[in-house]
Length: 341
Image 1: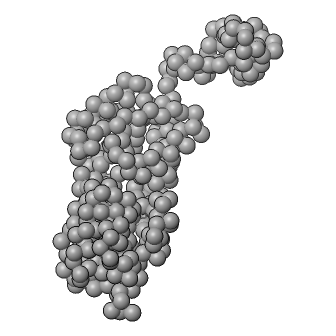
Image 2 (image 1 turned 135 degrees about the vertical axis):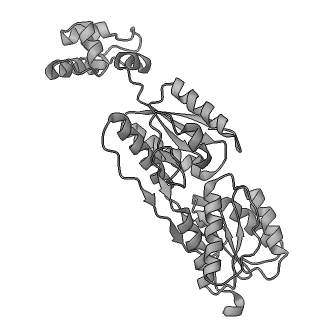
Image 3 (image 1 turned 90 degrees about the vertical axis):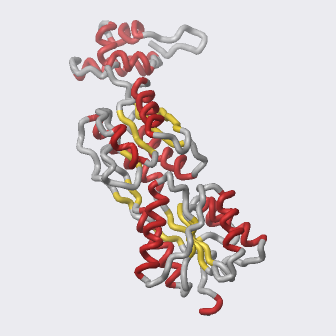
């Protein structure tokens, strides 16, 4: 049977059955992924599906197979680049494996109950596995007894929520801080991220540890909230302290704001103040000056998390838990201090 034109009615399972020479019940079993059909019959049905142009409705497939082939992702409401980049990785693997992705967003600084509600909402929508793209440490007690497959994207391996796809946040802070100290700076100031996020806490703690190892008292932490505006405010604070020659900023977005404030105050980067940051977003290479930053493999994190949850759903052997290594990208926002030149 030739494919029908767009002006005709849509082809149905009856049409597929007629072309394949089987019953509509057999067509339903094949389309629903049931295994009690002979391979040659299944091949004939799928050839008829192609010949007729029949399009399977996702809801019908779910009813027929008992499967939704849907992944859920819980995110925190934020404009951060990392969220969208990780989601790209999740969606890429999901598409490769024939899964759809649905998301639930939780307001920033929410209590654990909001995450539990999001989890329940995704389960009601039919998610067979859920990736937690959130600061998951405090969620262990709330979600730890759930049976839905739940790999987490976070920064601890003891969160009790399954298997994490991790970027070593302490290695990030160490690379950024040691880079500035090795250039000859007497100390390194730090603009932290929002401490609602475990990654921010880990970076701050490791920055302090590196200074301690070098026998340097840590300067006061300047708080930020990941936004360029908070970086700008931190930059105004830094600009008013003449002795500051080096700053480790916990995100590229904040670093952009900080460098703007330094420029307005007449403090040159890197001539007066060297700046390192974290993420290596696309704009980092095109800032003025180009930003020295620690690259995080966000898309690979998303791909790893999605691959693990799909393997768990399918009953296969999941990929080994990955602790992904960051990479220091040295550009022109850092240099030796003038006094050491």
